[in-house]
Image (cartoon, rainbow, N blue to C red; front, side, top):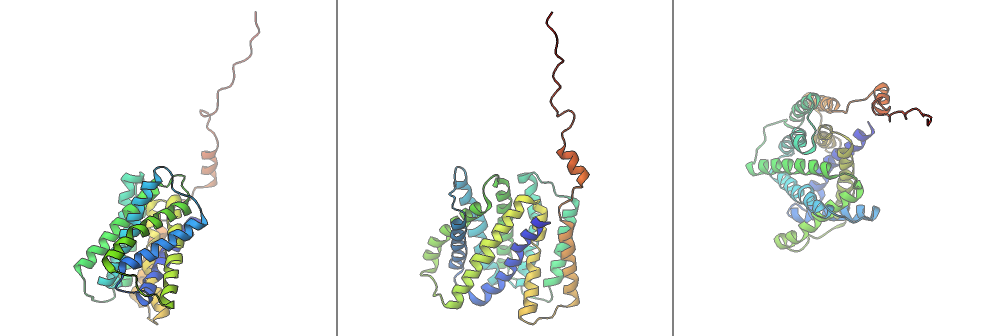
Length: 305
């Protein structure tokens, strides 16, 4: 359960990121916002674990940084500007099922029935929590949100497949730095000079980079390394839960009976996706050598005639 608790840090931090970004970061600079989120976070992790990529990790870091950081951050920003948070959260709630289907051919993880049931129940719970009224829907916004969900799901499973013996802190830093390096020249070409940074904006960028990015992605990729993709995807449903609860705590919103029912369904979906526990008897059997695995006994000594 420790890996589940560690992984849960990521969606909880991402849930707070919506509020911080909306309230304190410039709304008209999505490319700079994504670059200033990724690059400082990657440099901090690199300072903590001073390792450079080696071998195939040079191009793997570039691919994962482009998918998980550059493209994903920009698409999420665009979706948050074009869609109500409720609609964007509902589209992103398809991520657990998408990750399971992608992990089947890429990571050889066949989805369990419990994972599929948890994804369906969790999606229903998200709809109950966030779809509380009739809101306008932007087709480009829905497409951006769906593209963000697909890109991130594919990138996460690639990271799980390629993780191997690479250090989690180091590989996460490589992805973030690559993503920031990709974004900076594009931001300069499209958005011009960097936005002015007031004290609240700097503090908000610090929170987004250190907590909602460096810490969150380290926890997320650690979970992907130790847990099935279906379990990690279902834990991600805590993201919209955090957003709704934060709105209740900060904005004084009141949870309705419908939202409380959705919260119960989401938690039930997460519980269904928890990894199976192995009994001590099973673990002792798997750890003890089988008779056929033991080396053959040496032949009896014979006297020379």
